Image 1 (cartoon, rainbow, N blue to C red):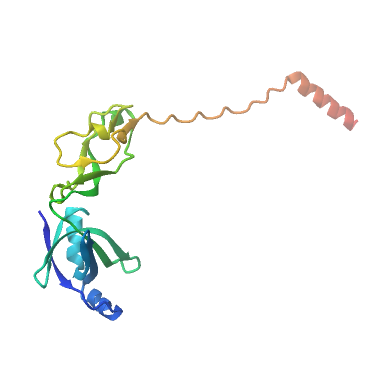
Image 2: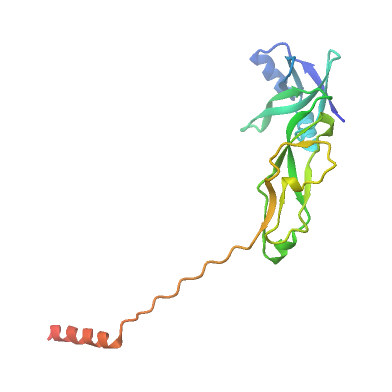
Length: 213
């Protein structure tokens, strides 16, 4: 289900007008997509950030434009002022709810791996999964249960359960998580021992005494 946000058309693209938009708490943006002319508009900055925070970056947003037009979009990318930590600009991609889209979905692990209780280390080399799905069937996240993994075990993309409403684009042989053996502590170097024979030491002492004489 799409989250609704109000949007205002932005016809005046002058810098002074853009500054005015930001000062009132909105963020300027543009909507573009396949077979669609770009539409410049603005939305409330706080509402947009809240929507992405609560529903994920792949959330379907229904923009209610002031002229009565409704645009189903996904947030493609955004710019933040690093000094003020404010949203400066947003790019939206118009989606057709009947057509598949390619997206990246976050992978999160659940449970505690058995192997970690024995000193193993849980490693997750893959944090996002590439999938293709209808916009309203994109999962917010993909959960992977690691509770049964022993030391030396791993879960691959091919191990993901069937029955999903999306197509996986990732190589099925890609490792998602694994439990590796504990790292061995390096052995401490042995202390050096003076192995010079006592006889040689005594001879050296005698030579030193003769030199002094």
